[in-house]
Length: 188
Image 1 (cartoon, one colour):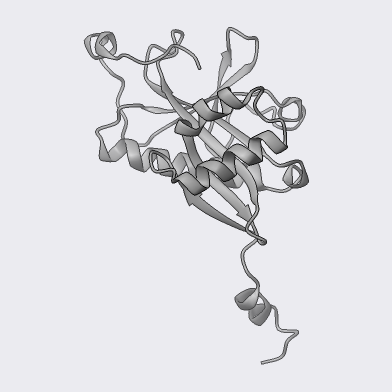
Image 2: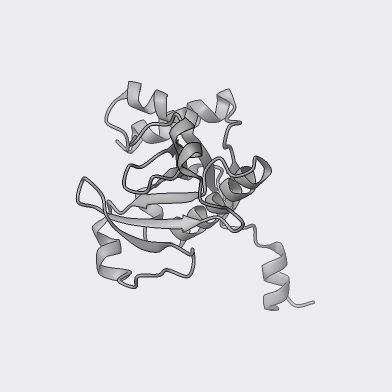
């Protein structure tokens, strides 16, 4: 087989990113690397806030050199406007990778992992909610429904940010009684 053969090249080229699901299973070494990553990029205001956020890490993406390129987090919450339990999702992408498809890839993979986790536990949360803090999304993604990942426009948050939701297949809305029994924060 020739070295110019695209199939041969694809078979020998390592993937651009390696994704590790860490929801509810972040090890000490990964926690330190994530903390250092956030601090290095000034992603979270204080070291104490970063330390608290480590319990929410859902997925880590590493580049071909093994360096962290992105981290996603999820926090179970009960947003007052929705009245249903959702995972509040955030993703931080290293500046070097912000023009790549990494934000889409880590969001898709994180949603798939959170959905599987929720399904195995009879859906403690019915989906993923995010607030768009990046102005680039306002310019580029103006459709009410995003298809990859499948997020729906759901209005504006109390902070005036656009809200998008991804509902898990098979999830059901909680009854008023079930919602009254939920003890989750209303917002991170």
